[in-house]
Amino acid sequence: MRGGISPWFVAATPPPRPALSENLTCDALIVGAGITGSLVAERLTRQGLDVVIVDREHPGRGSTAASTSMLLWEIDRPLVELTAMYGFERAARAYRASLDAVTGLISLVRDHKLPGEIRNKRSLALSGGRQLRSRIAR
Image (cartoon, rainbow, N blue to C red; front, side, top):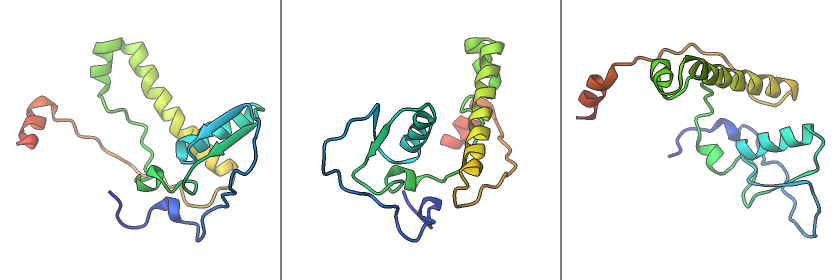
């Protein structure tokens, strides 16, 4: 599942991870210090909540480290399929929300001056329909 060097391991040493040695009181406890837990903590902290994150691993060293770190705004289903399921307005709103989420994450990384590099890359999704998928599966 892991190969090469994960972008999450860019730092030479893992961030500090003090042991939990006393009872704490907080507004929100987040279990997991990977990308999802970190983003939730950032959002709640920005809203003024007192947040504590716990994880048995170093931050970003669990399943986050196994990811490709590629951010794609495309959704797994084509727009025409989502339109048939939910109608055009809702389907288009889902696509826009996905694009906004990636744009927001890029802004967040830049605003916090986090280490690493974010590069825009062009992508092309080819859809061959059910016939092509069934030929590939053989």
